[in-house]
Image (cartoon, rainbow over all chains, first blue to last red; front, side):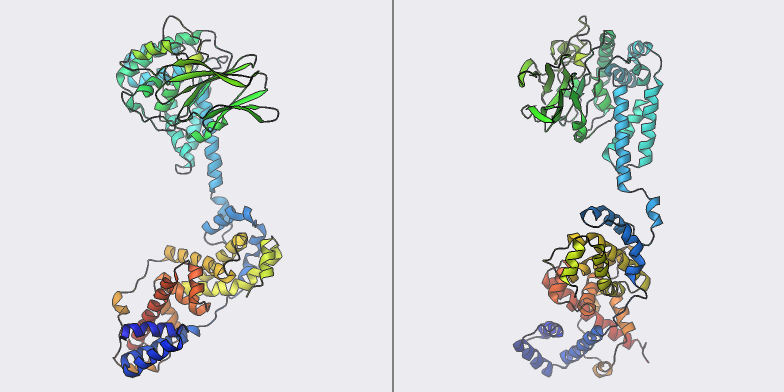
Length: 425
Length: 182
């Protein structure tokens, strides 16, 4: 047995961890090895000293000192948050510091409010043509004249601009890391103050088209070439004409619930979507987590049903009992679009667009509770920029009553663009 | 030893029972904090924090663990966090772990270390070694109880404790040799 092994035995002996056999082996070694004997002495003495360290007690009762605070604290499972806060606050006695420091919940609430504000702002100015004029201004000065057409249509809309401004300032005040939404809100708000503002007022109060697309993947306008920007602006002009048609009474919303494919300079459905106002939104750097998608509910005009998109399917609930009366198949990776109810609430129209840009329109019939496919639009093959309008012609987004028959761009629900399809119906 | 009934009442939401329970454990909490932090004020702060956490987290205690090891886990975690925040990590050079013997054996054997010296030596240990020593000697915990408190394997606990004692005896011996004691 060497000294190192004996060291372990000596250590364990201090903790009463040796059996009699081990003890006798250790003692045998120590008798013949003065070094280990000395070490054993020292360790034993140390251990005894450690065991005799004074059992210090606090000068005053710690429980008494925290009693007033304890009475304020919740106990039980609901106390978890509070406890975490306490733990983070370091010295517990410093109660006043709690009020001076906004907690996470505050940030979350703030972020939520900001997000709501930004969404509201986007909806107000979400007339896709206004966005397009904005983006074309950004990208190509040659398109100014067409954008100008739009801005002639009305007075500068100060209200939306203000709303965007405030959303912007509060989001930057809130600090970046609390919410992803918050991060993303800032750039979009910044951009929104730019040239599209004059155009925003082309959306009159009775134009109820809403076109909000939530992009999960981040895209930037770098992916849009100048050429395409021109095309967009051309479309913008045509669609502006469409917009001048009597607007639909049925509110229209487009909601993208699936992650979009990564942006590519030449990319099929991506490029198609660039003709939509929603794309202009996404180009501004706005991305929203899909998580907020369920907030969108399309109520039938008679109030009897509510349609919503959950778990990548269309679901219809009976409003009175909140009973699920219909759910579609799961459309994984699809985008829902052109959701609208008939005036008489007899049918719910919507369309799904898959990752390849193929759009299928459906009609859900309240009387039967069944879903019927209405029309299929093939994926747009993008051979050139001109395809934007060309393909739009052939696209039958649900409820896409072409607003302007003279140009193919109007009312286009092209490829990925389930968006503005119903503009002029 | 805290009565199981008191713990149950506290977990059921009886605030008086919870406060009574805290009174029973406040000294053991403070003692650990004091020897881990080697500072009265820090120990008070850490103890308050630990007691508040126990107060709000009592419902998460499960009977499969010993109550006192659960309490010590909370207080040691708080102290280690505090320690990391307040000072740079201290480590002991490896050479001090070298098994030294043979020189001037008799001269030191008879010496008795003052508790002040021991406390300062403990303070020089790396945090895990210190924690193990404190639980072993100030809470009279077994290897198993230490392992449960610190969520460490048994062998790791032993290794920390053995190394800590070796370091301590080396430190204290140097102390004496340095002529601090007359």
